[in-house]
Image 1: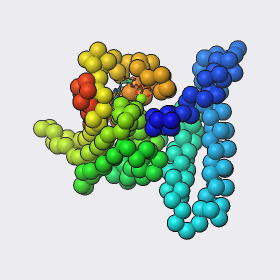
Image 2: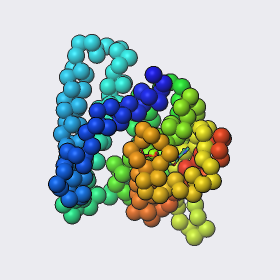
Image 3: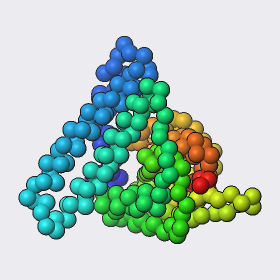
Image 4: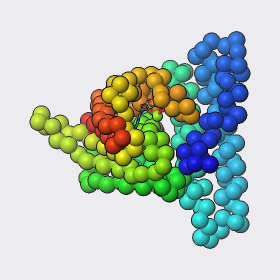
Length: 247
Ligand SMILES: Nc1ncnc2c1ncn2[C@@H]1O[C@H](COP(=O)(O)OP(=O)(O)OP(=O)(O)O)[C@@H](O)[C@H]1O
Ligand SMILES: [Mg+2]
């Protein structure tokens, strides 16, 4: 099994036969989608309970090397659960709560997750972060946007490579301050045609992804906080995704 297989396997197994439209036949599309989200919430709870049992097992005592892996899975599931709750809240007409977010703390949490769970042939480097101002946004949405960009970078390097995330503060001419989050990979890159369509909803070149909604979601998050996403890419050399977010 290749590293990419291990990382994306969850999306290729039974789900292929259990299509939501079959499970929720008869429901309106929006209801069907919410039904899927709701059931995802149930599955997340089951997986969380299983992980809690594993983390209390005597095998996990002391310096077990599995401890950070389990901790990362717990963090990931907690965020997944929050996303599900948030989606259900939005469906009921609520709003994703925005609050001052410590961006560097968010990035360090992501770094822990990536380092503990990704294949060792992916080298991840987080840098910058000096005196980043707080960002008014929804914390879960910020982390989801960054994870989407990092997953794209990882997927672009099936045989491994280097991903860097540089966080800096940029001062505009008009005295505005932006946080710049620049994710670079040295993966397969994109042709001009793919680059021009990359952010279109449902555009994908992958057989095992979630269907081409990652970049549209990143764009939506960026626009919601008054920022933007820029993509630069060169075939065979890699890609740079830059999020600029007003603080
Ligand atoms: N870092 C990257 N390197 C190479 N190609 C990329 C990169 N990021 C995005 N792409 C291209 O843009 C397409 C769209 O990306 P997007 O994140 O929207 O969807 P996806 O990754 O295919 O699926 P999903 O994110 O829904 O699981 C990808 O299929 C890929 O062709
Ligand atoms: Mg993606």
